[in-house]
Length: 350
Ligand code: HEM
Ligand SMILES: *[C@@H]1O[C@H](CO)[C@@H](O)[C@H](O)[C@H]1NC(C)=O
Image (cartoon, rainbow, N blue to C red; front, side, top):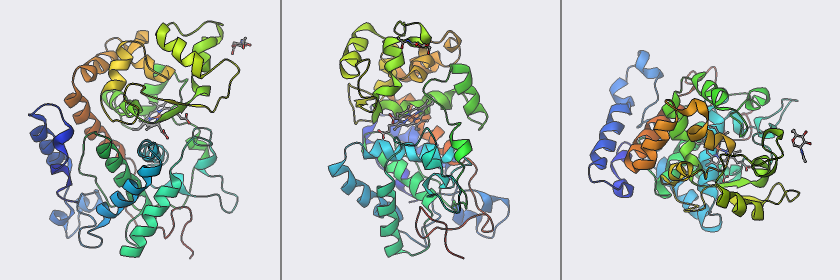
């Protein structure tokens, strides 16, 4: 794991970027072994957390993901999203993965996840493979973080040194999951939801770039196509040709769960096309296009969109950095507050 940020640079387009990305990774990646003996630094996540206890962890997860992707081209995007939805609710504690128990409602059933979040079975398969190799060692929260990095990298995006050492929490938070960023949130609210977690406008724009791959249901665009903000008109910030294209796929009274590519230009590739799409009003969600087109985007998020549309290196570098920030949200380190679950959907029996 320690050396992982140094490979995979083939995906970058400019010759200067491998050095830039590797430097970034070194700067950001805390190394546990240096901190052995404890102190405040022992609270931090680090890249080499499993080097002694489960040295094959990264490779094991990678093998499971590659296998899953053969029959499910969408799986990388879905796994990326699970890590996001986990980290934004109570921090990266695998709270998303718990099934309901003792009457506790689970995040899985909250509006942003129900009938939408997917890939749980692949996380379970990775967990089973890890349990076979090193029982009781690798947390489900860390599996989500590793899976997100592998998913981005194998889709052509940047790699980064995944910081590890999270424990899995004991609870799921249905209420808080209902407050995840939503596709109809206005730009001020989106910004606020990120700021509340210590994430700035660059993080908001960079992380939204994950909508460069994966699928999205018609129900999230029908208002934009036919009745934007109750006007009975389409969203004026939607490219007319793209609107015609989407109207074919998502008729007014059609099936709301029908799937579309987030990025029709390169559906399964992690590249900067999300941003080049926004430049020509081809964002899928209202929350996507707002980053460029909302009046409040001028001077805030729009220039960042422009920068990433113009440079894949700039996007990749920012994305890797923001992923590390997101992965650092509220990790549980104290064994009195968390555990390494045996199975990701269940807290361990006493
Ligand atoms: C900024 C606010 C965001 C909003 C409002 C939002 C909303 C959505 C929605 C509505 C979908 C489609 C769900 C469906 O059709 O079932 C989706 C999919 C997706 N989101 Fe986001 N998202 C946001 C940010 C992010 C971030 C920060 C990431 C990751 C870093 C991310 C990664 C993804 C991915 C990869 C998919 C496709 C998943 C798949 O194909 O299974 N999103 N998002
Ligand atoms: C358009 O949206 C408004 C507000 O949500 C709603 O009251 C109205 O019934 C919708 N119009 C149609 C034709 O669906």
